[in-house]
Image 1: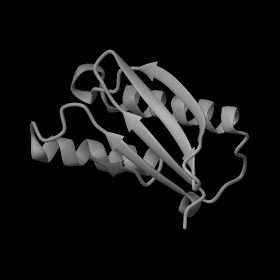
Image 2: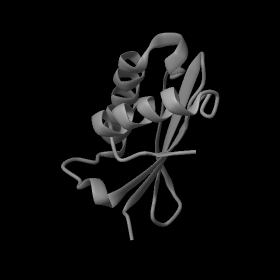
Image 3: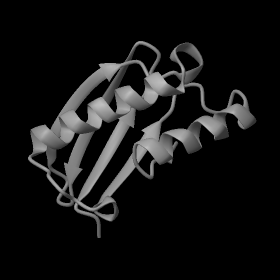
Image 4: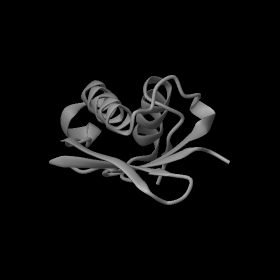
Length: 103
């Protein structure tokens, strides 16, 4: 069982992140700028998600943890509007940030 679960609520103007431990306790929260790739581009989304994840890990005191120990779900704004470009954006974000589950 993973040690941490991270939920990301993406939006056009802001994005909220939360880290919960396996016991259901909130261990950290963060907020970054919007993550709507059609508005700001995939590179900006990647940078913002990395920033948010770094802030979460720092606030939670998480260092050197294996990717398998963290499950990340990302409510990606606009997902489903254009399957082809959405899938390409998802793959780029997954490679650059974390094996995200896009919901």
